[in-house]
Image 1 (tube, rainbow, N blue to C red):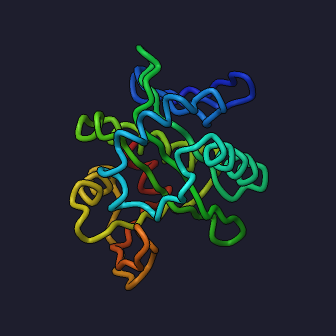
Image 2: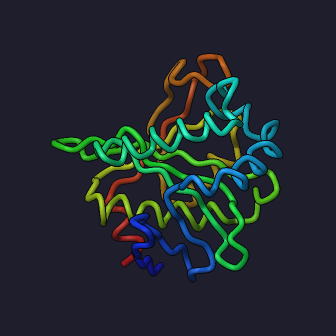
Image 3: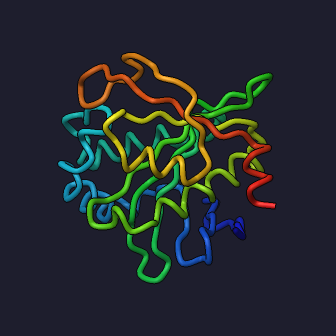
Amino acid sequence: MQIRLLSRFLNQEIDVDDGSLYLRAPVASDFDQWLDVRTKSRAFLTPWEPLWPNDDLSTIGFQRRLKSYHHQKQNGTARTFFLFNRHDESLLGGISLTRITYGSTRTSMLGYWMSVDHAGKGYMRKAVPAMLDFAFTNLRLKRVEAACLPANDVSINLLKKCGFREEGYAREYLEINGRREDHILFAKIASEHQKQNS
């Protein structure tokens, strides 16, 4: 897979697969499209995500997100991208690396979401390897972890297809939609990713 890193208005862009998709850091002008996608996808997404704040789908909520994303990028703890279709610039979903740590660990946590209209079409199957390339090559991480609810077969299958290995089971690991939930833990290490892509 060829990944080409560009700079557009100081926002890093990552080509995905053949370049028909790309990842880009969210900007203020994405609000209208993001609002439309997240509103349509709310019932589809909320069973798998942390509880949405009351003002989540507002301009203030989006500005708060952007400020948090920028702060996390500046201090090196997370990188968040939106996934777009290059042909029509439509927003398909989002993907992030959070809990980035360096030193002896050099690891992060992978998270992602897809709009209800674009789920099941293989877009995230293309985006995850691109994000892993970015994590292992650009950020020089050695390990990327992911966690899934046991009932989320789609996400579990996606991670396995992308070369993640199941490593354990964590009780009440994360708060999802207002409740502490058990999660299955997965990880992929840099040497495995490099071997698969050599």
